[in-house]
Amino acid sequence: MKQSALKKSSFTLPRAEIPLIKNLRKRLKLHSNTEVVRLALKELSLKFDREQLRQSFREASTLVQKANAKEMAELDQLAGEALE
Image 1 (cartoon, rainbow, N blue to C red):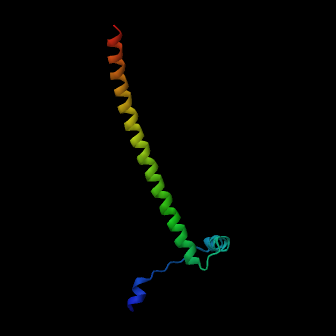
Image 2: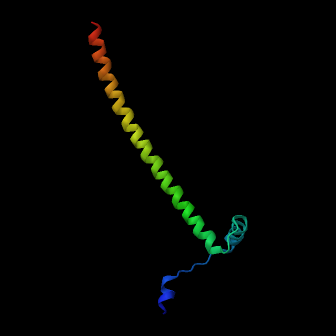
């Protein structure tokens, strides 16, 4: 087998998905079905990365809220002592 053939991969889409690929190809003004698949994979990867980032922000926010609540409780206690 030639070296260039080893670098390439190929797969067959189910017949029902071909109209979807052709429609996207036309709407996105792409030159080939392969470009449609590449773009879709890239977009899916970006979406996944954004979701992971959102999850990280949620977790960090939760930790900060807990730490702030603890600090506020301590400060409230100190403020209450000063009033007496």
